[in-house]
Length: 505
Ligand SMILES: Nc1ncnc2c1ncn2[C@@H]1O[C@H](COP(=O)(O)OP(=O)(O)OP(=O)(O)O)[C@@H](O)[C@H]1O
Image 1 (spheres, helix red, strand yellow):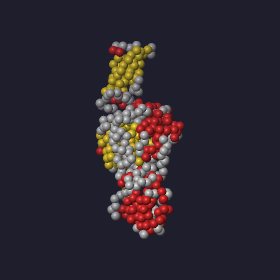
Image 2 (spheres, rainbow, N blue to C red):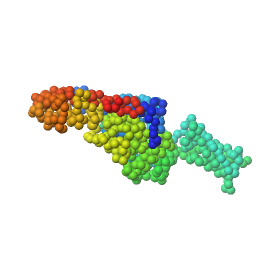
Image 3 (cartoon, protein in one colour):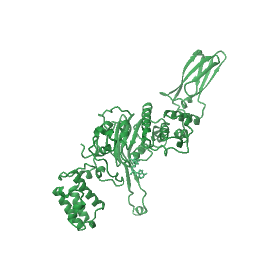
Image 4 (spheres, rainbow, N blue to C red):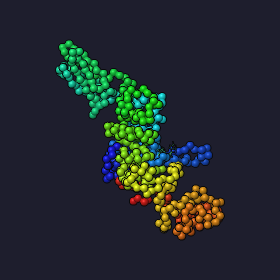
């Protein structure tokens, strides 16, 4: 989550394999709606909601990749499918080179320790009947942690004062790694043995149980062990995490409703950190918070990323949030990624008309570089059950490409396409038309400003309509006004900053 410029000479979609922690390829998540009885009787194929429809991207180790787009574009479904909280219906997700869509049993459980999620709404994502401490410790409980790792060695780093170190023998229990974080495969207890007027004392920096005994002959025996049970250790870990996310360990026994929104989100973050993951999906982590606390939570996420070397997939609909914390940004529209690139490039040189329109909805101060020459988005995202043919954005796109042989202004072309859409949707029917000339009222623009070929096409089509032949009318309009944008779905290239648009090379 650095604000430094990311090198732009790397491939934007694929992080060239080696440095990718997560690689997503052609990911699909289709939801199949419950069939009606009639569907079952007629053996119709179930309707698919194509929430994620062939998405590919990499998240490099240590980076923050933003995933942005309007509500309903499939961002959450992507995040949850990448984490295997939902099952993919196609494609692959590779984590450290292993396809996690194929994992099961203990391998899947291991992946769940490595990758976690912070949800948007910290109130509904926390169980109201659990205290903060219980919520944070729950993942440890589920995984039976903390437990000792037999491959970790136990060691002691001894210092003495008033005692000759050669007189001290220390025995460290093998399982101290339950309470002492190992470094490079060794859990080291830092022990200090001192003598003062009261006798000999032994203290450890770590939270372990130390007993000291002075034996005949002047030798000193120190035992280091972890005597607390798992439950107590989990509570200690929860307390540490509370402090790390900016809360007080004294609040461990409070319930979610006793915290503010920002504090609840901190608890959600502590819970996500409990298993020491490498990768976290942040699903709109600050969208539900007051603007005044958003920056604090973003700063916390930034600090945690640096301290623990975390990799983030940051989901947001608000581009202004993304700008300051993401290294790269992927823009999603109706189940597809339409543009991906380094954050500065996305903001300073947006290539896809959808990205430009999204930038238009960002508060003005944040997009001075992008200019203000694009209309903000109008209308809603179409249904992913029946996405538009070709480029999914074409029904809202302000720069649809007219046919080569039709010399027509964009606005006039859009108005002509509206007539076509209404006819094809059934909103304009033969019953609404009496004569060929009726096209002049159906067309929302200056009919006389249209090129002759367009006027002829309308007149022919409306004559067919007046005669009751809707199919012939639709065919005539398609023949004249069909655009490449509805024929072909533009692919996302593999350049440094690709955009899936017929206008972008
Ligand atoms: N369980 C489900 N069954 C059917 N359709 C679903 C299901 N979950 C999501 N969808 C649909 O999939 C599409 C993508 O939803 P998703 O929540 O992933 O989008 P999003 O971009 O994250 O939006 P939001 O910001 O509102 O969460 C939407 O049309 C949604 O209605």
